Image (cartoon, rainbow, N blue to C red; front, side):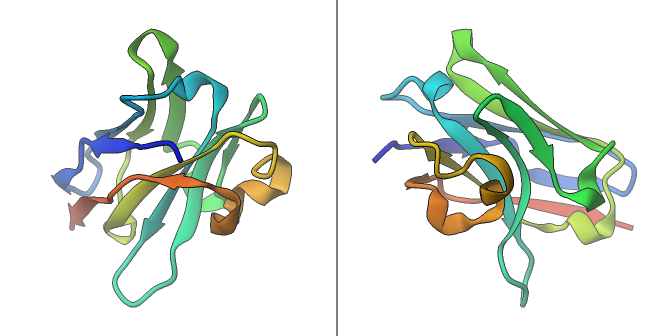
Amino acid sequence: QVQLQLSGGGSVQAGGSLRLSCKAPESNIGVYSVGWFRQAPGKEREGVAASACGSLLYADDVKGRFTLSRDNAKNAVYLQMSSLKPEDTAMYFCAAELSDRACGDNWRMQRNYDGWGLGTQVTVSS
């Protein structure tokens, strides 16, 4: 099971930006599908974005505001979040999967990811 480390959460005002990082200290994250998820208080965890099987995929409510990228030299996957809204406030997680289970529409399904990092809090104030 791949071990993941998250960083980059914090508090910002609406309209601000944050970049989350997901790293795999003991694995080559470049060969994994990586998904970003978030969970707001009282709500279910939901998919935000993924880099899976050669595709970049985004939830509708973050399209145009969030950008997922990879830096294989740093063994990292990033989630750049811009134009943040109060409703983006949540605990954010990254997850990784080596097989093709998270390809296509399956990227949103948490059970398709084998490794999870501990969450990082993102708080957006109005």
